[in-house]
Length: 315
Image: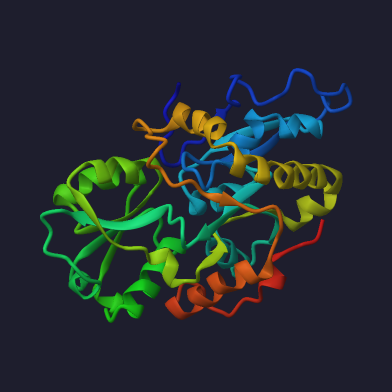
């Protein structure tokens, strides 16, 4: 299996095949190139891989190629440069692109944060003197993405707990690099997925759940594409949305099967008994999107207020 580095996208296959183009698709679909769909090595960004492995795209005769990228920022950049047809990004990164004039629109739902099941936590080394949000002032915190959802959540959490976010230094690191960085490079890390599990097996402890400072439930990410492409490919878009919406309940109720997909790409062993899985939804819900946008505006992560209705296009 080839590794993926920042800035280098590779096409990945489904759980049982090296290619994401299905051998049994209809003859009329064979003339169209595979749909280029975003994928990342985390549970929240793995929905297309899970749906692919279970055959949901095959059911709607939609050949796809999964393109691996490290985070929302890289996915949005790839989609803006036409290296992707359909991307997956958090509402903040997507909004920033739209406010810069890139004609993106959300077409389908994806992961949802649920306070009772936090898949991302803020951790420090067990020997750290940091106990509270206030203790992080003057310290360095590792995030998966600067200016995106994790920094917005951290800003909300710090503010809610009496700390000054402007006094905290944020650096961008991959989740897999955060555990080692806690030894000597950063004072805290906002970490998710299998790397969180690995960190908790080491000498670390949890000091907070920053995502919960946004709301008890909210949209982690949304499927999106460029509006001109959507308009020109509406039948394809509808088939994609159909596959994604059908796959969400299946993913939520088949942890063993989806965990097997994650294990193919995870940088460290995964303990099924300890990992907290992302919840996926099958409906675009304004009530789940707006809290993120409001928190982003307060944090300065977006420059102008955004109505969640304006983020979505009906397909």
